[in-house]
Amino acid sequence: MTARLDPFAVAPAPMKSWMSTSLAVAGSLDPTLVSLVEIRASQINGCANCLNMHTVDARARGETEQRLYLLSAWREAPCYTDRERAALGWTEALTRLSEDQTLEDARTALSDHFTEEEQVKLTLMINVINGWNRLAVGFGLWVDPAVAKAMAKAAAA
Image 1 (cartoon, rainbow, N blue to C red):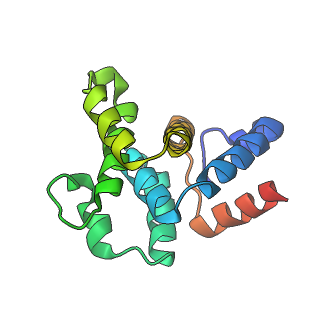
Image 2: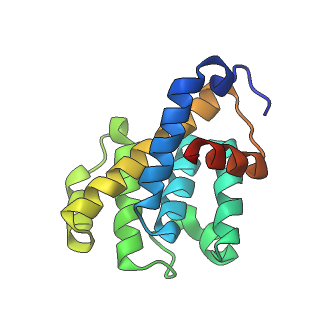
């Protein structure tokens, strides 16, 4: 890892808790949906570290190149399900809160495709990836995906 500040070295206990929470939240949702949310939020936030890591993970889980390349234009691309579109709309609305997005439209689509419990889990996932984006961009983190997997395994132990 190269960084201006390594949060794992400076604050290991809270970072281990953050990693554990992140893994628990991600594990509560469909992995394909998690990947789409992670990548789309990271695109919006300009987080190269997370884009690198999560696109590698998505490909390893079988995500197609087409869907990865079209994610930034998901509204126009026919390759996403209505459920995925609802999740992506919610991701954008929450990630861009300060841009005065129409939250109500996103909330309506979300409630049409997700149970209340799933809505909470998805919202937590969006918060998690936005938090990781801010850590990575803020501290200049660059983690090799293989190293990130090892860190996640260690945090889960």
